[in-house]
Structure formats: structure tokens, C-alpha cells
Image (tube, rainbow, N blue to C red; front, side, top):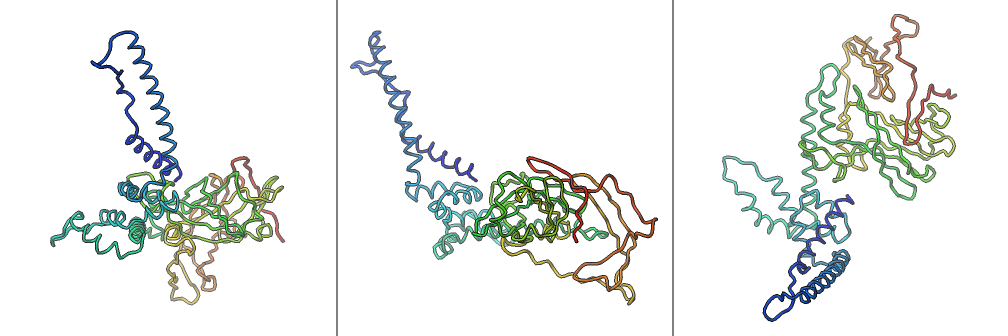
Length: 424
């Protein structure tokens, strides 16, 4: 956003310089009958040209410095005229320059034209006027009686709704065997969906951390955050895991992180008692903690400070959870009631279970179990207990590939945690 802001200011400065600076190349030596051809006069003319060029150069430097300082002093009418030529994304970024540009970029006359162009009425058998013909009466009736920024909010809200509707169409086909959308990976690609963690201090300050590593597996996605500039753990109170989606989705272009994005809260975690949480394992320099649901936090042993954060999210309602919520309230998933069998002995039957064990790009086990069943007593709070491998039945045992452990990595070190600690 800062790059776009600097580009906008530089273009405005260059435009002002083009309007006010004299042309340094059109210089003639003084004379009564035109140009003099004597060598002395040629030398004097050359000196005069050099002096004027030097003065013009100094004038250009002063004008450039004056332009960069007094840009905010331009009349609002001129700035509004300039802003009227920007597209929606650039206009939203311009509103982040300062308070004055924020109010100018909220102008309803600019946004209603953008809104009318983007969401023009569909053609039908009835005669419909063009956007250009209907723009003027719409401006008169719907702009002056609305508060500043009304049509910007309407435009952004409708853009978000169109993105959600497009994703719903992509996720509509469902695999009858797994119950998961067939095109989850395609939805992640075209939407530009990503994930951030927001670290909040006790005083209210926030740190937004972009994910560094992202791996998509058969039925889940694993996200890792690490870096050098983590805030001190003692000052932090909560951690928010959020999905982020570009407000403007264009399938023909690669999604960018520089534009406006929509935050959807997935889960909120407390960091106040992190050192006292469940320890999953450790090595020489890292201690690994678990925060429910589904978050792993690595702390440096010596400093007791954050080293990395890792989240694993299942494909089940992944896109909905990452896009349909707000920055403070997670999305509400529809209630799911399992269909029980007629037999009082068994609650569910005919299920299949797919197990995928992996860490750091290494797969330890990938297998599918068929024809599973469970009793009614094993169904509770939306979860079902399925027993697929019994310890005493050797025929059900499966080999694991490699040594099972947890592979971690930061921008400085990497390591491997062989086995969890015994907590008791």
C-alpha cells in the first residue's frame, strides 16, 4: 500500500511540474536583426544559454521540493477531479494517505459512478437506459441525501457478496464418498484466500503476521508463521487466526496482497498462560505447545519467546470459515445432525475413514478404512468415535514410513522433535 501511495504522489508532482516549468531548450541570443554570427556573440549566447539552463535547473529543483511539500495544499476541487480518474482499488488505497485524502476518497459522486458502472442493470426485453443516461438523475436523487462514504460501503459490500457467491458456485459439487467439496483447491487458488495471525498486546496494539509457509494436503492445509520481529510474549494477551480474502476477485489476474482484503475470524486463543499449556514435545532449542483447537506454538527454550506458530485446517467448511465471518465474529456453520440407523444397537454404519499422517513434507501414513460403524454412545458433540486399528489384532496393524516426529523451521534454525514429552 505504501508503494502505491508513493507512486500516486509522484505522478501528481510530475503533472504539476509539467504545468509550471519553462522550456529550457528554446533560448536565443539577443540581437536587433535576429541571431548574430560572430564568434564572440556565439560564445556569449552559449554562456547565456548555460546560465539560463542552470537557473531553470535550480527552478525545477525548487519547484519539485515545493510540490512535494504543498501537495496537500491543493484545492479540494482539483484533487477530486484527479481522484475521479482512479479505479476502485487505487481509490481505496489513496484514502489511507492521511485524514484529508480519506475524506476526499469517500466522495459519493465518484463512488456512485464506479458502482453504476460495475453493477449496471442487466439487459431485458424492457427498454433500459444506459449507465451514462441514468447517471445524472441517480446522482441528484441518491448522492446529496446520503452521508459521505455511503456509496463506497455499498460498492465494497456488493463486491464481497459477489466474491462469496462465486466461491459458493465453485464449491457446489460435493464428493459423495467424503462429503467434501470436489474443487476446494481450485477455490483457494481463484479466491486468493490466505491466512494471518493477529497478535494483540494487553495495551491494545496489534501485529498482523502473514503466513510464510503453506502446504495443501489431501484433506487439509498447513500454515506456518515465523520471523525475526515477533513481539515479546510477556506483552501479548491473545492470538487471532483469520482468513483473508481480496475484496476484488479477478480470475484473470494473480491475487495480490497489496489491495484491500476481508478478514474472517476462525479462532481466538489466549496467550496469557501459554508456558503452562500442554507441552507436546521439545528438542535442544524449542519447546512445542498445543492450543485448542488445532494450533501449535513453538517457544525458544532460553528466552521463552515465540519462535513459530503452525495451524492445520481441515477442508471441511474451510472456505466458509475463512471467508464468511467478520474480523471479530467467526462464521456460524449450519447445524449437522447425523442420520441414525433403525437398529438400537448401532448408531452409524457404512462409513469410511481416510488417515493422512505427515510433517514437514514427509508422509508417514496414508490409508483408507472402509465399512466402519459405531454405536450411539460414541456420538457426542458432533464427533464420532471410530476404531480402525486394535492393538491386540496384529492383522490390522500398518507400517509407518520413516520415524514419526515433528519437523519445524524458522528463518534462523530448523529442527526435529522425535517424540512428545510424557506429561503426568
